[in-house]
Image (cartoon, rainbow, N blue to C red):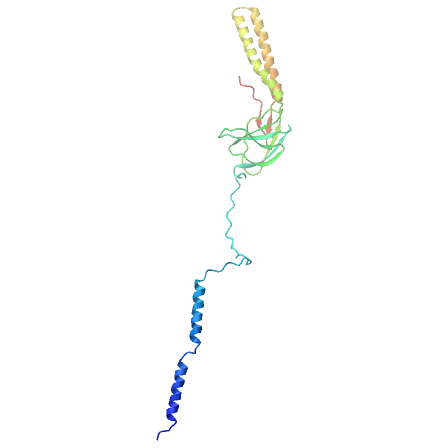
Length: 234
């Protein structure tokens, strides 16, 4: 005999299963709102930067190597020069002996300076002092010590005039003496001897002035490396 409650129980069980599988009324609405929010976030433009926010630190890359100073002398072609001169305002001048350019002031005495000397001629000049002959300074370590004993430019000029004038006078005297001897003219021979003597006195008298006007440059050992004692070219 069937129990009257059995159909009722089966009906209640069926309703329970159907109720458990169906979604709640607001579930679909919530899922739709979430999907719409995600789409809006993906398509929205980027937000403006906050002006108050500090900028992101930038990592500093390796610093570029510093270019060498073009004005700094290379130790392979330079020398440390110490210059002393007994004339005020004496200067050391340098000039390239390859390019044969103009003389340029390198330092003023008393001078203690590192200079580029490779391929350079050097000389010393000052007001009232005869300019020294050209000389060269070797590059390398250590100190190139230079001592300048200046000569008077005015004395050198007097010596130059005496030497340049004495040579032609002496030659003229020799010519007169020779011609007088050949022609047997005692007066010409006498005039030739006198003229020759005057020329010789002028030449010999010019030598002390040339010596006083000579400028000498000595190194650390006292050796003369440049001397201005050259008679004028005739």
